[in-house]
Length: 389
Image 1 (cartoon, helix red, strand yellow):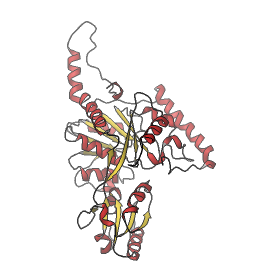
Image 2: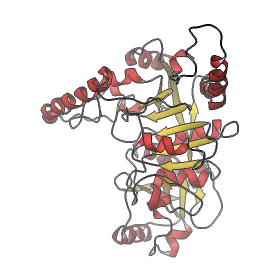
Image 3: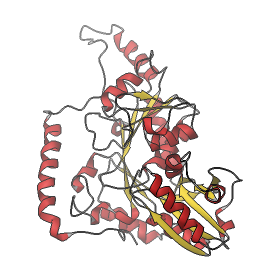
Image 4: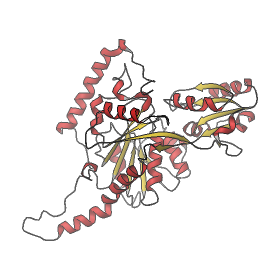
C-alpha cells in the first residue's frame, strides 16, 4: 500500500524541528528576494524530489530525453554526485564514470548524441550550456535532481514522489526522510507519483489525489516501472525477465530504495538472495571478493541481477570471477504512465519547449522591438513560466 516503506524515528523529532527551522529560513530568503532565483532564456525542466533516497529520477529524466531528443537539441545538467572531479564537465564518448558520476555516465552511454554535463553550480552550468562556443544550439536543458537548487528558476518544475514513501505520511530529516517541509511541494508544476503498483484501483487514485492536496495549477500524474529484457554486462544475449523461473538469483544493488526491485523480481525466480550496498556505492576489492564467494556458494542454475546504475560502477573491476562475469545482467527500467496520461504529459512538455524555445523568444523579442508607439520598451528578458502555458 502507499507509504508502506516509511519509518519514522520519533526520538529524533526534536532534531527534525531544528532542521526544519533552517530550511524554512532558507526558503523564506528566496521568497522575499534576499536570495535570488535566476531565469534563463532557454527552456529548463527540473526533475527532483523533496525526500532522501530514490524516487526514480534517472528513468524519468531518460523518459524526457527520449521524448524530446528527436525534435530538439537536448542537454542534461547534473551535479554529478560522488564524482572524482570538480567544476563544469561535458561528457564525451571517452569520459570515465568517476569523472561525471554513475547516473550521468549511464545517460551518456544510452544516449551518446545527447549533451550530458555536470556542474555543482547549476547557474554556471547553464551559462556554459547556452554558450554556443561550448555547447552548440541547445534547445532545452533538463536539470537532474535540482528541486532544492532554488538559485535556478525552471520553466517546468517536476516533483517525483515515491508511492511507497508518500511525502504526506513522512516527516523531516533526521526523524523521517523529507529534505524540506511538505509545503515545498507547492513549487512544483507537475507532481508524479512514481513506482505505483499496476494493480491500483480507481479508488486508490482518488484517495491519493485528495491526500496530495495540490493547487489547481499543479498537474498530477502516476507512473509505474516497466522492466525491459535483462542485458548482459560482460557477455551473452538479452533475456526476458520471465526466463529466470528456474534459476537462483543474486540481486546486487547499490541504490537508495531497492525494495521495489526486490518485490518485483522475487516472484519470477526459484530462490532469491540479496547483496545490498549504500546508494552510489563505490565497489572495492573486498566487495568484489564478497560477490565472488556469495555467488560461488549458490546452487545452479544461477544468475546475478543488478541495476543499470550499479553496472556502470562495477563494470571493468578486476577480480570478478569468470563465473560471475558470464552470469551478470543489468535490469533496465523505463517509466510507464498510468490512467492513459502519457499523451497529456507529452503534449504539455513538448508544448512548453516549443513555445519557449530560444528561436521563439528571439522572434518575439524582434517583434517587440518594432516601433508601435512611444511607450515601446524594446527587448527585455522574459521569465519563462510553465504556469502561464
